[in-house]
Amino acid sequence: MARTKKDRIIQMAPHFNGFKPQGIQSVTGEDVCINFEEYEALNLCDYELLTQADAAKLMNVSRPTLTRIYESVRRKIAKAFAEGSCIHFIGGNVAIANWYKCNCCKITFTLPDIEDKHCPFCKTQEITDNI
Image 1 (cartoon, rainbow, N blue to C red):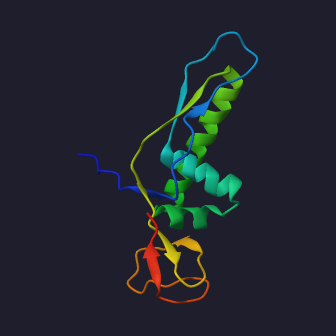
Image 2 (image 1 turned 180 degrees about the vertical axis):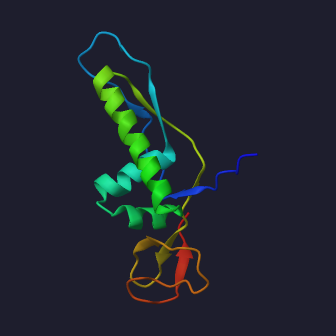
Protein backbone atom coordinates (compact mmCIF):
# COMPACT_ATOMS: atom_id res chain seq x y z
CA MET A 1 0.00 0.00 0.00
CA ALA A 2 1.37 3.43 -0.90
CA ARG A 3 2.09 5.94 1.79
CA THR A 4 -0.27 8.93 1.93
CA LYS A 5 1.29 12.26 1.00
CA LYS A 6 1.59 14.77 3.80
CA ASP A 7 0.37 18.30 3.18
CA ARG A 8 2.88 20.72 1.69
CA ILE A 9 2.84 24.18 3.25
CA ILE A 10 2.21 27.04 0.85
CA GLN A 11 2.34 30.71 1.75
CA MET A 12 -0.58 31.73 -0.48
CA ALA A 13 -2.62 30.17 -3.26
CA PRO A 14 -2.35 31.98 -6.62
CA HIS A 15 -4.85 34.81 -6.99
CA PHE A 16 -5.61 33.90 -10.63
CA ASN A 17 -6.75 30.74 -12.41
CA GLY A 18 -4.02 30.30 -15.02
CA PHE A 19 -2.66 31.61 -18.33
CA LYS A 20 -3.74 31.52 -21.97
CA PRO A 21 -1.40 31.90 -24.95
CA GLN A 22 -1.91 35.00 -27.10
CA GLY A 23 -1.76 35.29 -30.85
CA ILE A 24 -3.08 31.88 -31.91
CA GLN A 25 -6.56 31.15 -33.23
CA SER A 26 -7.04 27.88 -31.37
CA VAL A 27 -5.11 26.08 -28.71
CA THR A 28 -3.10 23.27 -30.26
CA GLY A 29 -2.08 21.22 -27.24
CA GLU A 30 -3.85 19.86 -24.18
CA ASP A 31 -4.30 22.15 -21.20
CA VAL A 32 -1.50 21.88 -18.66
CA CYS A 33 -2.54 21.58 -14.99
CA ILE A 34 -0.19 22.85 -12.30
CA ASN A 35 -1.04 22.09 -8.68
CA PHE A 36 -0.53 24.55 -5.86
CA GLU A 37 2.61 22.91 -4.45
CA GLU A 38 4.25 23.13 -7.88
CA TYR A 39 3.27 26.79 -8.12
CA GLU A 40 4.74 27.41 -4.67
CA ALA A 41 8.03 25.64 -5.50
CA LEU A 42 8.42 27.73 -8.66
CA ASN A 43 7.53 30.91 -6.77
CA LEU A 44 10.02 30.26 -3.95
CA CYS A 45 12.92 29.11 -6.15
CA ASP A 46 12.58 31.35 -9.22
CA TYR A 47 10.73 34.45 -7.98
CA GLU A 48 11.80 34.70 -4.33
CA LEU A 49 15.28 33.30 -5.27
CA LEU A 50 15.46 30.96 -2.29
CA THR A 51 17.72 27.94 -2.37
CA GLN A 52 16.00 24.61 -2.76
CA ALA A 53 16.95 23.74 0.82
CA ASP A 54 15.31 26.92 2.17
CA ALA A 55 12.23 26.43 -0.02
CA ALA A 56 11.92 22.84 1.18
CA LYS A 57 11.94 24.00 4.82
CA LEU A 58 9.18 26.53 4.13
CA MET A 59 7.07 23.89 2.38
CA ASN A 60 7.73 21.27 5.08
CA VAL A 61 9.17 18.71 2.64
CA SER A 62 12.60 17.18 2.11
CA ARG A 63 14.99 18.81 -0.35
CA PRO A 64 14.79 15.85 -2.79
CA THR A 65 10.97 16.09 -2.73
CA LEU A 66 11.15 19.83 -3.44
CA THR A 67 13.50 19.10 -6.37
CA ARG A 68 11.00 16.62 -7.85
CA ILE A 69 8.13 19.12 -7.48
CA TYR A 70 10.24 21.93 -8.98
CA GLU A 71 11.38 19.83 -11.98
CA SER A 72 7.80 18.73 -12.60
CA VAL A 73 6.47 22.30 -12.81
CA ARG A 74 9.34 23.43 -15.05
CA ARG A 75 8.63 20.57 -17.48
CA LYS A 76 4.92 21.44 -17.51
CA ILE A 77 5.58 25.12 -18.23
CA ALA A 78 8.04 24.23 -21.01
CA LYS A 79 5.41 21.91 -22.54
CA ALA A 80 2.75 24.65 -22.39
CA PHE A 81 5.07 27.18 -24.06
CA ALA A 82 6.22 24.76 -26.76
CA GLU A 83 2.70 23.54 -27.60
CA GLY A 84 0.79 26.80 -27.09
CA SER A 85 -1.33 25.27 -24.31
CA CYS A 86 -3.32 26.94 -21.56
CA ILE A 87 -2.06 26.60 -17.99
CA HIS A 88 -4.58 26.00 -15.20
CA PHE A 89 -4.00 25.85 -11.44
CA ILE A 90 -5.58 23.02 -9.49
CA GLY A 91 -5.48 21.93 -5.84
CA GLY A 92 -3.10 19.41 -4.37
CA ASN A 93 -1.89 18.19 -0.99
CA VAL A 94 -1.45 21.63 0.55
CA ALA A 95 -2.06 23.57 3.72
CA ILE A 96 -1.80 27.34 3.83
CA ALA A 97 0.69 28.74 6.35
CA ASN A 98 -0.51 30.58 9.44
CA TRP A 99 0.06 34.32 9.19
CA TYR A 100 0.44 36.62 12.19
CA LYS A 101 0.46 40.38 12.74
CA CYS A 102 2.63 42.15 15.31
CA ASN A 103 0.67 44.58 17.47
CA CYS A 104 3.79 46.71 18.08
CA CYS A 105 5.56 47.11 14.73
CA LYS A 106 2.52 46.14 12.60
CA ILE A 107 4.37 43.73 10.27
CA THR A 108 2.71 40.60 8.93
CA PHE A 109 4.71 37.35 9.04
CA THR A 110 4.50 33.59 9.16
CA LEU A 111 6.12 31.24 11.67
CA PRO A 112 6.83 27.54 11.83
CA ASP A 113 4.77 25.68 14.42
CA ILE A 114 6.69 26.59 17.56
CA GLU A 115 5.63 27.07 21.14
CA ASP A 116 7.30 30.46 21.70
CA LYS A 117 5.58 32.70 19.14
CA HIS A 118 7.13 36.15 18.82
CA CYS A 119 7.65 38.83 16.18
CA PRO A 120 10.84 38.13 14.19
CA PHE A 121 11.52 41.88 13.89
CA CYS A 122 10.92 43.44 17.33
CA LYS A 123 10.81 40.14 19.34
CA THR A 124 7.59 41.04 21.19
CA GLN A 125 5.05 38.33 21.94
CA GLU A 126 2.15 40.70 21.33
CA ILE A 127 0.96 39.10 18.10
CA THR A 128 -2.45 38.17 16.74
CA ASP A 129 -3.61 35.70 14.09
CA ASN A 130 -3.97 37.41 10.72
CA ILE A 131 -6.56 35.24 9.00
